[in-house]
Amino acid sequence: MRAKDMKVYIQTDLEGVAGVVFFENRQPGAENQEHRRRMRRLLTGEVDAAARAAFDAGASQVVINDNHGSCYNILFEELDARCEMVHGRNTNGCWLPSLDSTFDALVLVGMHAMGGTPNAVLGHTRWLVNDGAICLGESGMAAAVAGSFGVPAVFISGDDRVAGEMSSLVPGIATAAVKQALGPYQAQSRMPPAARAMIAAGVRDGLKRRREIKPVVVPGPLKLNLLESVAGNLDQTKGFRRALPEDITAGNMHEALKLFLARVPWYPRPTELPDGFEYR
Image 1 (cartoon, helix red, strand yellow):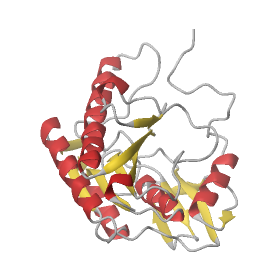
Image 2: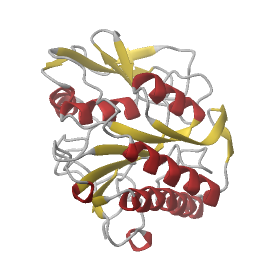
Image 3: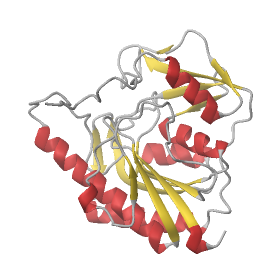
Image 4: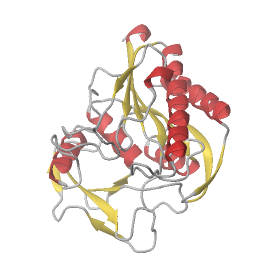
């Protein structure tokens, strides 16, 4: 595929953005609403830096998946006009909507470490694959879903813990550790302009080497379950429990995750409103 036809998929979260160390309170009238707006602006800046770098590297199409919470966090009006956005609460069970084998690379922005990672900033989610032969966080799961389509994960930004986690899973992946983790709710962050510059440089590097970075492929048939913390996402002392009593079995990670999300009671259904929003 010629460089001018390169398609890039950007998967985003919020916990790994420089300046973010707390989960937001999504209740209407919450006292930290201005804080939430600030965090969204910081997220938007990092995503825009990644998108512009992808276009600079030769991408003809950049699709961004707003994948945190309500899935409606990124400020459209502040993004490069060439971008396209997947947004709103996903109810079809496809965790990376619109991603398929026509994409050349996956870019991960604002990511956090998996649940159980000591002192990681806002670390949560631990996927159990094949009875623990492999454990994946949300970044690793995104890479494995993309790998089901033959798409490599070429870049990740977040704290130093998730950068290390993904470097072990994906040899050669470009990283931007925009903050150093000091604990679950504390970090030493780079300032937004510096963080964005790190992300832009990393995206350009990862895309330049995209043919050298192998997709994450978990051979099927595989078993999948989610480990949930017994005492809350950030408690590292009380152990975990399985989200489903029986594992999901499927031929690849994309299929397995879709089957899993169809069964867990907390995943949104088509008739449900997104959390954190009121419709009047």
